[in-house]
Image (cartoon, rainbow, N blue to C red; front, side, top):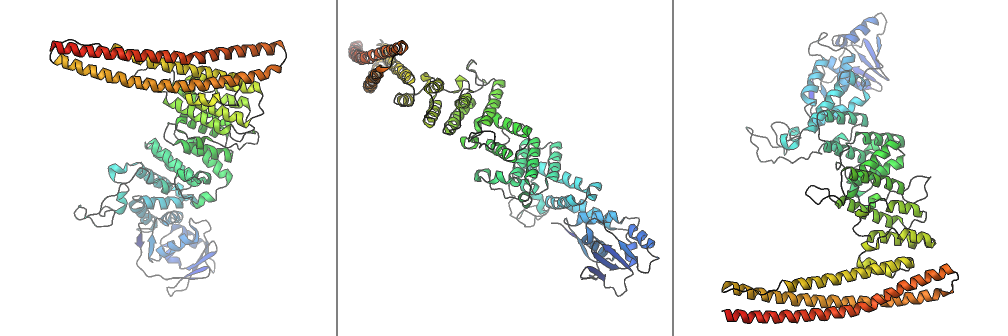
Length: 632
């Protein structure tokens, strides 16, 4: 911190209680009253430096005891003490902590060059311009003292400090080495002297663009807003401004600093004393100042800002803006951050489902505007990727599974969030199936009709084999859904078998013998060996797959048999409609059993056919070898 000493005379001031006395040997002839402090001084040193004091002394000269009251001098008694010492030529020290008070007091007392040469206004301005404004720390220290001095605005002291700080914060440290120059022009950061401009060994430090965040967060919010506004007018990068605003919010809003993942940001003493209303206004102002560009602020920070906004009950516009910001980058959110508690007394659910739905709507609107996610788009370079909306679908399915145990979550609200995503957003419905299963388990008293209605949200054709296996044994699912799952599971098995047989046919068709001499014959023989080994490996894999499918089909037959027995137990129901429904179900199960019973025979036939094809292929390879030998 820079400082300058003025005056040369030794100290001649002594304090006795609430009074200062000048011990020069002459009796005091004027008393200056500043608040509760009185100064017993002499007229000549004061009027020779200050035009105001000269006029006041002249006005009170007719009194037996000349008393002057200065109740509104900037800086109070402490500033006037330094002014009085300057008038007497005593030693005083100018520093960033007192320069603003001294400059304002000198202006108030009219200590100009017309009154005396090298007066206090001139000395203070020189120190302020040549020392304070050249240093980041000194400018910051001086700016903090401007908050309690309205005269600093009239003298443009606060404005000059803000512009100095904004200029330094906007400079790229990689280009100019700022704030390395804080150490001085002839010193390295390590403190060693530079000789003839050559470093003596100390290495310059690497500074990131956020080096000034912590210092700026120590300013009062009105002053901090002026700094950010000035930086934006100077063309500061949006990511730097957004980072500083986020840091300030973390430091001044205690709720944002509870999670260690948000970063270790110490709370300021001012932040600890902010009232709830002050925190509310601060958060609303920060929201208005934040840039709208996507990705400048991490999604978890935005969600915690939104959570704090709900706790503080900020205005609706602020919450809507934060929801929109989160929606713009919802694909980067985590499930833990998305679980926003319900702070409203008008909603019964544990989590704020309506807020998540609005966030999802913002994301879908943005995705639609950008043309992303549509399966009708051609797969060409530059077309939007399905990755963001797929990630959001996975996130929402996980969110549904987390909120499903809430007993106050009604089926329409659950269904509304589940159906908000387009069909192409989910490559598989496993996550949705899991969420519905958790919901059915937690809401065991749900009527059968509502259970079937929820299960219609699941596309059985988009369930994996693992999910199908679980669903086929899930007692919470309606019987119709279980049968549908079994049907599509069998279709998947048949498709897999057909694919294996098609691969085998293609291998046989590609293994025709080649005729030629010399090198061609050698390459043909090598190709034949490769085809034979490939066919053997394919046949072995096919056998293993068939064995696995045979076991699965046997399991399906047992399940179908068990369902047939369950349906027979329901025979006590009366009414034509009931009998018609049971007959229809039994007919469906009968067809299912027929398909299951014939599947093993079909697989055995295909296995024998594949073995015959392999033997035929081996015979062709042997014939081809003999032909190559004769040609040679």
